[in-house]
Every structure is written in structure tokens, then in C-alpha cells.
Image (cartoon, rainbow, N blue to C red; front, side, top):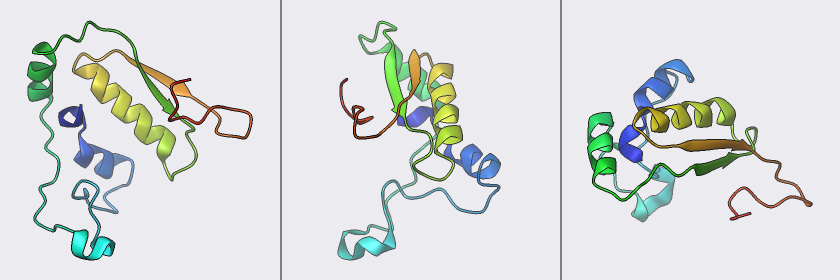
Length: 110
């Protein structure tokens, strides 16, 4: 799934080139845990399609839940990522969820 995400296009279009593609979940603030030589995740949609074809994935819907407004640009970024995943053959079920005291958190199985 990570091969299907065009991070540079997200940076260029949504963030208007005001930031750079991060080194995975790496940050200099991590101190000794930071690895500046960690490669930027590769964008390779053909590779993603090839790997998907090698799995037993049968086209079942994959829930992709978001609250849409917790992080800056969260909604548009998650919509873009869902579209990129669909483009390589994943059946993404994009779902907007509330994350309040009476709702299940977006990371739950409910």
C-alpha cells in the first residue's frame, strides 16, 4: 500500500511545495532514534499492482476511517491516498467518523 502513495504529488498539490516528503516516521526530534539515512518511501504504482497480484486479496472492501479534521489537511490527504490505493486495485471504503465520547474511535474495529 505504501508503494501506491505519491507523496511528492501530495506535497506539491495540497501543501503547495511548502514542505518536503518526510523520511517515513522520522524526525530529528527523535534524537538518538532518528536515522537521517532512512530512505524516503518509494512511489511505485506498478510495483504495488504487481505485489497486490501476488497476494490472496479478493477485492474485499478495506475500511479507511478518518475524522477528517484532526490534523491539518487530513480530509483532502486521506481522500487523495484512498484514490491512489483505488488506482492500484484496492477496494477502499472511505469512511468519515466522529471521534467523540459516544463514538468508537477511528482505530477500532467497530
